[in-house]
Image (cartoon, rainbow, N blue to C red):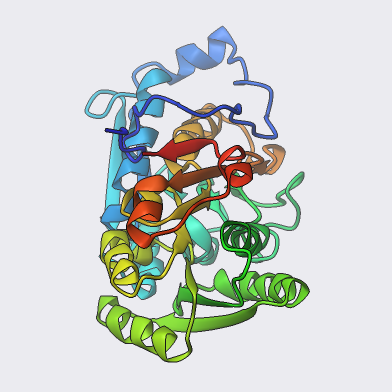
Length: 336
């Protein structure tokens, strides 16, 4: 049985190295600064959307422990869950600001926008976001220009690439459904990139909006009426929470599908995505630097260059699909 990659200690089985445009390691802290920090208890505000982020939060905590931060000893993490509702993020973030936490940690475009709205002074680490510049979070990756830093990947390119991979798996493919959460502001620029790629490949793109888990069945019925031949599941915390449900519904409709790493382990056919727990663990390095006095404006946003491609051969067999050997050879991981 292939280990579940959502656990933060999942051993790497990838053939390529995890590459980030790095900050060249942790900043050395002078002995005087260390002495000044002795006995201090740091308070971090952590805003989460739902249970799908738990593996990332666990990875962040492990990364902080590796750097000498222990909850209950020199660290307090004030966690505020949004219970799957993007509209709760601004109020929860503002609550943490009122507590005067030393630092905020969030993720995604909605979380980053809530943090930007709530404070211009408290340092903010965005553990992972699709495109920080396009979302208006920072002026540039090299010089964020404010109190926010973190890691990003180029979400529009990633979503467009999923069209290509489905087409490579099924060369005769002409119609692809796209399931997305209408509440996630990050999807609008991604859809534009997908439409351009679909037009180039002469594929019809068929987006369907999701507002809650109750919409899944209706969305799949709509795609069946449109004679969709495959499905792309957009990266989104709410959709990630119900990945297994979506994968099962897609399988019932015999729709080959592609999503993030969690989704392919839930039964999707393909994944082309960021390794989220690894990136969350990397966020601990930003937290450490900021707590030691670094200026967020001096910490460039890191570009996540490594995107993983995973194939679920068990799902392919269930769907009666034969994945071309040339595509399998490109996979970082194959689930058998």
